Image (cartoon, rainbow, N blue to C red; front, side):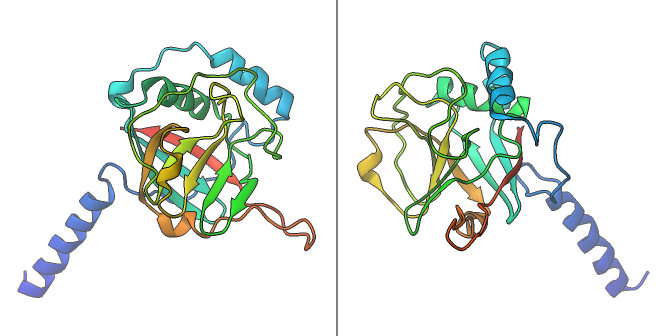
Length: 207
């Protein structure tokens, strides 16, 4: 075997290995079985899995597939165990599949995970505020809430630039590690122009 052929074979093997490493973005798949659930059906699903046990030792990353591409964020399981457990339950149940990115503020934040798609929806229950000690750096993933500190439920956001003023008021439970360019392309749409919001196709939890 010639040296050039050997090099190509080795390169192909290494590429395959690297492509299978933990946290690597995977290609998009078709809609999940829960993609077209109604808000009421999603709430019933969330309440059904609300108390399911979660083994956080094996829940390290979340792969978020969108219509604009995919991104991955690391879960802060040790720093925000209750918040991460809640997110993992909902994601594994398919609660987020088919929901939109309903809120966008240029250069600041993109937010999704609301079954109503308006910012007023929830999973039918609330979780207490959990301060993880992590900062709102670019790509930080946090739980959205209302005026009540203990009103988080299912909506989450990604900050598009550092915003440390939020650190003591919202729970940062993850950090984007791959695909931040995709996050910055997401949009909440424009009703005036008839542009629909971007969509969460599926969220997969992996180690």
